[in-house]
Length: 303
Image: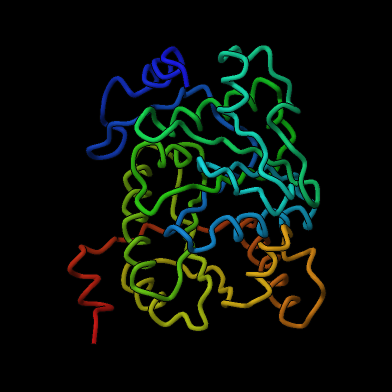
């Protein structure tokens, strides 16, 4: 990436703090509102299955007749892999190719249609240590608005990198109506979820985002998640067990709605459709009270 490009990335770093307690990050242009669509941001511990969950949820919304846009917010740019069957170019990639002259871009340069008609965008990210992911999210939303790609969209789903929601990783919370946390029934996932919940609450002081609830993933049981959720005031929205068909779908470059039919697969598909229906109908939005680190150890702890 050129020196000019790096300087442009750095210029977007917030000139002041105050966006949530102790926050110093890229501040989005208040005019860049997504509009009429319902907007969700998916967070969770790294490797917990956020992208698989997000992609199948996008398809479920599409199966309900909604026009869906999924935005991957990870330099790895594989959020939409099972939808498009490939790693598509990122917004940062195409912007750099035209020296950040956005007027030279067409929608087909950065928006790709995936399975069930889900529109897919990979925001990408700057090289490590050279810029802020919040700038990338802002530029992505700006491009989508400039090309009127949000005018007829019903659902926008951000799939976000990161265990700890800080800096640019929190940028989608400035657009989202509800933030969803994907977690397994284990201590590390719940510890990360607690930090994420705290970040969402900080952003909710200045933005409309609220915690939508937790999606239990890759777990046979949910007892630890339910214990934590009950203590802090979180809703358990759905539970997807650790099934081999979910692992195989990723290897097959396919969503769960494209896999060979089976009774267990039908149950998972039904779970995603029910989750989409719940989210579309509107969750009340909880105001959980996150725990101190020591309190999590005391609650879940080690025998």
